[in-house]
Image: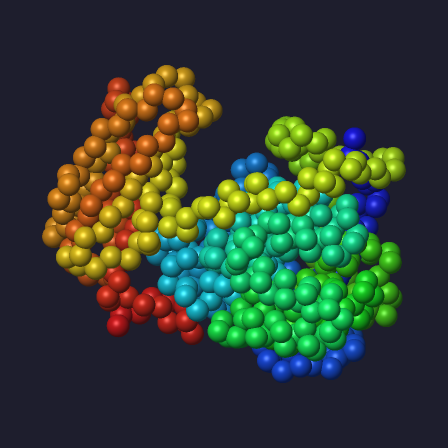
Length: 504
């Protein structure tokens, strides 16, 4: 049986959030500066405690969603609704993602579209701790939720970076060796992605006996074509802090920050990792006392129930993790992996070799890597329906656009075979030479055919339009009408300064 003592678990969760606040506060004054820093302690006057930290803010929003919905009902669209309602930070991918959502480009389109400059940036991996704390010792569960989170405003390496940190942090609840944790994190992202390459470069420099500055330069060379404020290099800097810090909390967060660039993020994540490994009680008073227990918001609208202190946050998160971990889905997940799931309660901590051996498996992660950023899922009673844009929802007037509709039965409601009709309603000037209507036979729960359509777009006065896709199950009078968004490639671009659509 895999079991963690309740008090030990709470101490690790508390250490996670304290480490997050410490590293974020330490790195805040240097954020965005590309040069090497030389800090060895806080630069600010911390008479009032920690400074505002969007890395922590956004996770309060996700935790509120979990409390209200439960982990089993969290989806990218649920998180997107919370984003629109509560997140007000305008910066970079945050603003682009929110504007996409308001235009009807729901996840994963909200992260992949109109976001070329920022989709690989740092806004996702900095908010991975909530998923690690809610899925301790289970990185495959943690990365599933990390994906749902990251695709709201990122794509590609912007997502892979959060898979890496979520997996590493989840495993840190049951593994203390940093090299092993890095290996587990790497197992959850494609070996050829830029994040993996930067991490591997940092590890290789450390193994070769090079100093941290040489490792930093090697990471910079590996990511030079990406520019600053991008996830691959900053994940590399975080790994440098962890490896060269050698388990010393203060040294590790300072080294991560001293690499430069997105310093509040690198310091905060390094602090969170060591906070999980070492626990709150082991963190040096030199670092904990100046920041205190307060949570200071910067990019969210205040909402009822938001924790005000780190102890309050840790208590609520730990209780939710214990509740979620005892549920049916967690037990079923453990059985599917062939190992007993981690339970939390009284009694000593005991982790089986079978669980530890399972941590670096890549099978579940590979399924996430295979997901297209251009598939939009829709809710249809008794059916699973999605529109695959193939290469995105942008279209040009008069230029053919190929799309696919995936339709299948809901596995939980597959009581009988079905015949479903699909019909597009097109605005004036639009056409489908291959026909606007198809009829599809669905004979089993694992059948999900792809029905191709060829669209010839017409004019789009506002730069965005929604085509109606009518889905009707034979025998039912009431159809489901889906609003499928398209964007005019020629007349709309985004102002990244304001993160709003503008006419060219």
